[in-house]
Amino acid sequence: MMPDPFVLPVVAERSYHARAPGYSFLLSDEYWTLDKNVRINVGHVGSLLSEPTRTGFLQALAFYASELSSHHVNNVHDRLRHMLISTGADEINEVMLINYRATLNPRTEWYLGVISGFLRRWHRLGYPGVSMDVIRLLDGWTIKGNRKGDAVKRKDPEAGPLTDNELQAFNEGAVQAFERDVISLSEMAMCLVTSSTGRRPIQISHLRVGDILSGKNMKNEPLYLLNVPRGKQQHDFRASFKPFAITEDLLRILDAQAKHSIKQVEELLGFRLQQADRQQIPLFPDVDVVKSIASPRELRDLLKTDKLHIASAVVSDVLQFVADAAGIHSERTGDVLRLNARRFRYTTGTRAAREGFGELVIAELLDHTDTQNAGVYIKNIPEHVKRLDEAVGFQLAPYAQAFAGVLVDAEKQARRGGDPTSRIRTEGGRGIGTCGEFGFCGANVPIPCYTCMHFQPWLDGPHEEVYAHLIDERDRLIDLTGDVQVTTVLDRSILAVADVIQRCNRRRVEMSEQGVLING
Image 1 (cartoon, rainbow, N blue to C red):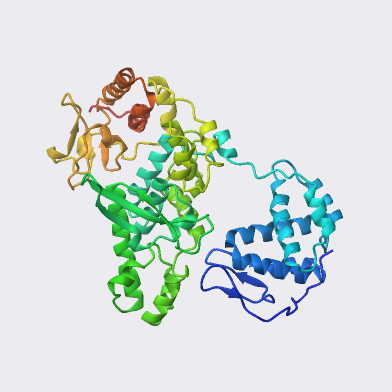
Image 2 (cartoon, rainbow, N blue to C red):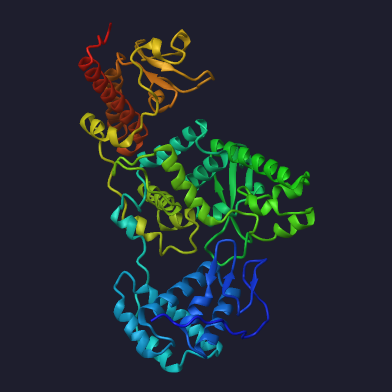
């Protein structure tokens, strides 16, 4: 039976300030907005509790909201709501806790661990609703924590770390989708900074223009850094940072995004910003909030908060959107990649463990405060990369979809087919296809061409020769180094060439059935 509708009583009409600057609430509010990303429906939980437990819950949760991270408060709220709904109880007592524990299993027992910490603090604060008998019961229990790194341990193809091929496919696919005008500059930049750094969505969303740094190291070599705000640790908004080294290519993309964001904000505001204000513009601004700003003073007030930044959920949404829009597939599942930012964190940790780094280095790389989570990568170091031989390459090619160009029956049908300078040749001088791009390309042709969207391989091109050369080169490097891992840079090209060969075979069958002379 559903409880009767109820209006939260006005326990105290003083305003409570959330930990995040710029956010406050009343105990009587049905919803509490704690920051850009968290808005909780305390009214629903309040409707499940009787007095005086209801009042004690609101006061204890308000204390949490003013002292702890919004995500932790949201987690406590959700777990408590789950317990109340599961048990049907309207107060906190020993019977309801025993009944609730009976509904949990080893994978969900950590729910009670979250609730236990909150109930203990609730009791210590002296608010009504949690008795000493409840605390004694909790003291007598040993509650298992959340299982860490389960997707890493299982090498889950839809939730765990990405393979090297999947990671490369995503990065290349995002760039190609931008070049085809399928996604925006902001979406490409968001994807590449996430995949390259393994940072959490909230850290990506909190980046600002001034966080992109370049200079020289002690050897006078170029140094490119991203000054990343710390996310999960108990720090205030943009109060603590950790620099992360990035490549020059990523720097250029982020610089372009920074200029775009400044221009976009200035156009929406209708006035030019001072240089100091420009440096504080979010790298990924919330356009709707910017539109509402009426003055430079209001802008500066908002810059003290997270309100000008996109919500962190947008980052994960964009990752999946780009995978869908660009048609980026997994060679393990044959389907479009299932993505979220956590998978890139898993990938970063997994690759570091595979390269032989220890727990301390991995914890530092992932911006952990301790090594308790980093151990899962060390204990689950992936097997050596399997040797990609000729047969395996052809088996994986249809799933990996590494070939991004368009097969043409003959040179004359290709874009720029009449331009001899557009021909792509093998090392032996034999023509294999046409480049449809008019701009300069510095790639070491022909191998990178097979994964380029501008490449148009010819039906009669000697693609088998290219494939055999790549397999031989891979074997040569393995024999030379004794390490299969160093040769994986060739794998995606091998899969792309195999895909072209298979497409050529299918096209020849199709033309034969139509009675078309292949060389006529």
